[in-house]
Image (tube, rainbow, N blue to C red; front, side):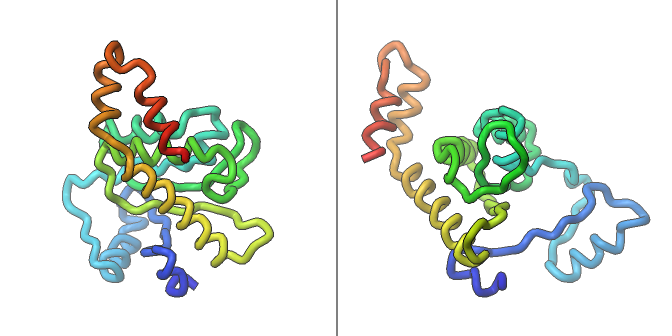
Length: 179
């Protein structure tokens, strides 16, 4: 199934490994190294964050802020993308179905931090085949990234750092890109 999803940009399927290497689970890391070629370096950070938008929003948190907190500490290992109404139970809805702006703002924050890793799609497809859901979610991420890449970043940064001389400029820039 994963091989068929390559056309949508799927590069890997997540495997869960413990965050601490010890005698009881060392064989898992040996197998990981053998199967993937990934080698664990001495002093490598094994404890990191993998924030999921759904869990962030269940806790009434702001997605960009949550990602930035992990990045500031050098602990952002991976990201999980879906959508979720505030509070509620973990629904794993398609990306952007609820609060598109939270996902797009989180992607922008990742870009500003120089994040160049993969995005994990963590969804529970409703009323559609899994492959169609992956296609739609990859499309949503690509649309958001294309829009972010088209923004005049220097103007945004100038406006952010000199608000006195740029009142309303960021809002105007973002409003114009919604055409």
